Length: 451
Image (cartoon, rainbow, N blue to C red; front, side, top):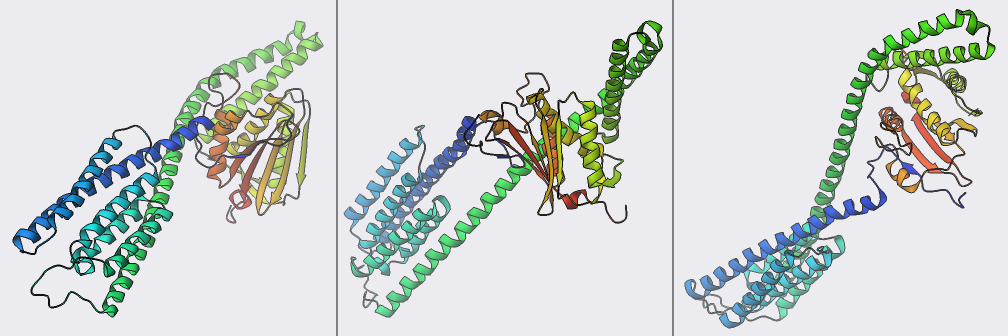
């Protein structure tokens, strides 16, 4: 008994093996990405340090423009020391957080601002290196850190318009720029920085969505390949089982006509029950051979939704040792549909699992129509699903039965439902027991006009 139902589990999404494993798996890509981003910043910083050194020496000695070498080389040394510390940090096993990457960019912006301060401020053509810092932040950081980087670079830009050491260049008559020109530069910078953050952020989000879709397609392809292998194995086993089932049927028929068995009513009833079960096995083998690994059988049958559901409930009740099946059909349209063995077997698998959960209690099957979809709810009065089973529900070989090969029924049901455009949901009921809900679009079941 529970006070509230356990959270439901949507199966047509990509599932993870377990709650604890899920957290660990989710953290691994983030940790790898953080470390990769830190290494990228370190590499860019080495390029920036080398570029600054070459530029400072080239301007001083080749262009013969005097620069405050002591101050500028001191800033460069501080940048190199910080990058060495970052390289040592990258070798640690600790996760690299976004705040740590942002601090590194703050140092880069501060050093660039200092170098520009000593070399002409906004009159220095390298002022637009600020946009490189914005671009790096837009690629590597989350939105709040991106916009914080934009704010920092704008502050540096505005500050350099007021405070900087002018370059002593004889050919330049005046280092003072008109306010209109400075305002235009600032507006241009703001526009470029904002567009970089917005569009690079959108591109990154699109790439992440594409990677998620590719991962989902790879997962589905692996599951479909698994289904094909099981289909081949099932069809081969069905061929092999045909002969022994026919032999058992003949032997039971002979026993039923023998006087010792015919004279005993109890033995005769048991023989009839055995014959019924063998007929059921032969029917299952025939259905497997018809399906031959397809999600829907090769020879579908035309029927109506009412007849299909009623026959399914009656046949399942008749062929299983069930105490009681409470079957209700509420508001289901009388729709002409295409039925086959795979669709029926999918629902039978769900009912079979409910029966095995509580063999001595009734099983409930409720059929309803909601928003142009067929909704089938199977309820049992068993112990319900354990949290780890809800996390693994619908994955192959995940079962509480403790038998080799268990768990394939729900795995196939999940994939058949997904093929038809539907999904499967599992949850624990508030008053005890479990509930499995199968949702299928009515349009996927409807019989084509030409059929």
